[in-house]
Amino acid sequence: MKRNIYRSLEDWKHSARRKPLVVNGARQVGKTYSLKHFGKTSYENMAYLNFERDEKLGQYFESTLDPKQLIKILSIHTEVEIEPHRTLLVFDEIQECPKALNSLKYFCEEANEYHIVAAGSLLGVKTAGEKGFPVGKVNFLSLYPLTFFEFLSALGHEKIRVFLEEYHTYEPIPSPMHEKLIQLLKMYFFIGGMPEAVAGYAKTESLSVVREIQLEILNAYERDFAKHAPPHEIMKIVTVWKQVHRQLAKENKKFIFAAIRKSARGRDYEEAIQWLFDAGLIHKSYLVESPKFPLSAYADNNAFKIFLADVGLLCAQSNLSSQAIIDGDLLFTEFKGALTENYAAQEWIAAKQQSLYYWTSEGIAEVDFLIEEDHQIYPLEVKAGASQKKKSLLVYKQKYAPSKLIRTSAMNLKQDGDIYNYPLYLISRFPLK
Image (cartoon, rainbow, N blue to C red):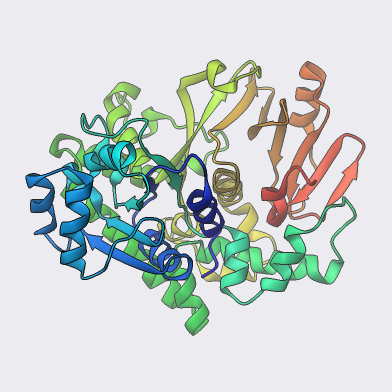
């Protein structure tokens, strides 16, 4: 699979600021596959270490954290000559060995000529508050489920992907291509971007196989809750996890704790939500009442929406039938456009690596996302289907006079004065340059 992270990994390899690299991401998003591919294609050789499968590895780091000594030991263990600049050393499932994680500090300080990449499932959860974490001594990258563009490549539509990546005008996309992309987008809404689900569809073209894979992934995540979460938080984590699709089905998608139970309060579930966020399973979008720079300074940490990391898993969690793919705009409008908004959230996170924010005005209007770009703040309204409604954008315009109003929908690319409509499949390209 052609993943966007390959370009970032190449940039890291040649960067003057290169340090040991930590790759974050939810379980089963393709971290191991991507790093092995990178090692095989960009280095003369690769030494791969998996701390979960090989429990003996941890003993080496118990005896020493000296980089030179570790290189000698690991070369013998892997039977690979680990050479500076020529060998990629991969520490996989590094969360199982805190000392190995801590060793990255010493590799950075004393032996940075060695190229080391570390990754792990639930790494954010396991290292939260970890005293030995090498703060300031590592670079970071995040890997997410396949984006829509990556999905196109995986299904053999590379030429369409390149066409979209190189498109630099607000002239409408040719109608036949636009209609084809809308159909492919519906497929993406159902299949999502989990690599196993996409590969399963590419091989079988069976949506029932896709749903089986998605349910297996959801079950695996719930087993992770029981295995890795603090015992006193497990039930709360499960409750929040199963609430996401219900909360997104509301007209006001703000996460309401009283919907869990009448007496529920935010502080009761704060740790559970943070655990899911650290595990890479959810995204949070914070309410901003005054859209000023930086948005993070004006965000209300007690008012937020929660999205799943993958729209296909949201589809599976909601038990949405594959019939919706062929039923007009149903997939876009299903339970008040929740899938559409979730899709926009994950595309934006993957494309920009930015936090999410939204804006409301005293119950009069709501803008789904606020975008910080080119030293400006733009309102982004996500519309289900081909809706042309723009009330919230106009309310926002009257209050703050932004230079551009952004709408994304199933409509074609179009500029109408200061309103720019991006088709949903092209939202990651904002702003077109």
